[in-house]
Picture (tube, one colour):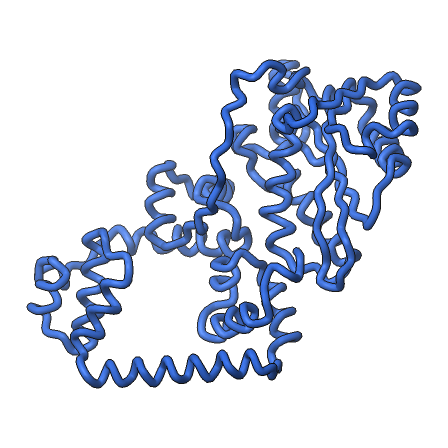
Length: 373
C-alpha cells in the first residue's frame, strides 16, 4: 500500500482511535490491516511534530467546550447526541431511549422524544440471545477477513457447521454492525451488447490464461510491479510475480515455469502492453504453438476475468496491508494468493474454491470417477 494514502495527522488520529477501541474494529473501519496499525504505532507513537501538538490542543479545546455545554443543559446535549445518530428502526430508538434515561432524563420524556412506547424499555428480545454464538463467529471471521461481506462469511460458517439462510445471515450481519463501508463507484457503461465482449470464452481448465499488471509502492519508496496470471475457467491464480520491473523475457520465464507444472494453455489473453507484444514473447508463443489473443485497445472488459481478479487483489490485499519492503510484499502477496485459491469462496463458482470447482467439474465430466481434493 502506498505511504501517501494517509498523512501523518490521519495516522495519529487512527492510532488514537486504536487506544480507545479494539484494534480489529479500527482496522476494519479504515480499511487497513491490524499489522499496519502496529507498524504505525511503532513509528508514530512518540511523534511530537508541531502539527500533532496543534491537533492535540484543538481536541482539548473541543473537549472543554463540550463539557461547558453539558453543564448548561443536559437534555439538549443528550438529544443532540441522539439525533446525530441513525435511529430509524424501533430497536435503535429504544436503545437511544435507554441511553437518555441512563443520562438522567425521565422515562416518560425520553420515550416521548424518541416516539417509542414505555413498555418497550423493559422488553427483552429472545432472538439476539440465540444469535450470540453466530454473531461471535461472524465477528471473528470479519476481523480475519475485513473485506468480506455477509455472503462469503456465511460460507465460512457453513463449513463450520453453522447453516444460515441468506436473509437471516444478512439480518444478523447488519444487526451486529459488521457491514463494510460502501465504496463510491462511478457509473459504468453497459458492454453486454458490445460485439466481442470477451472473445474465446473458456469452457475447460487450461484453455485460456489471462495476465496483466498491477502497480503499487512500498513504505520505503520501492515500486511494486505485479504480474497476475489466472486460469479464466477455474478462476485460479496461477502466479503473481512481484518485482520492481518486469520485461518480456521475465514474462516468458514465468509462463515456462507455470507450464512445466500445469501443461500448455490454448490461448494467452492480455492487453496491448509493451511486455505482452514484445518480440521475445511473441516469437516464444509461436514456437510453442500458443495463440496470443490481444484485446482491442480501450476495451478492458474483453479481459474482464483478469480485470476482476486485479480488483479483488487490490481491494483484499494491497489496500489492506502496509508493505515496508518489496520482500515483505512478496511474502504477504503469496500468502494471499494461496488463500484466494484454497480458502476464499468465489461467487462466480457458486461460492466454491477453485479446487472444489475443478473437482466437481471433473466428477460431472466422468460420473462415477472419484477425484480427491
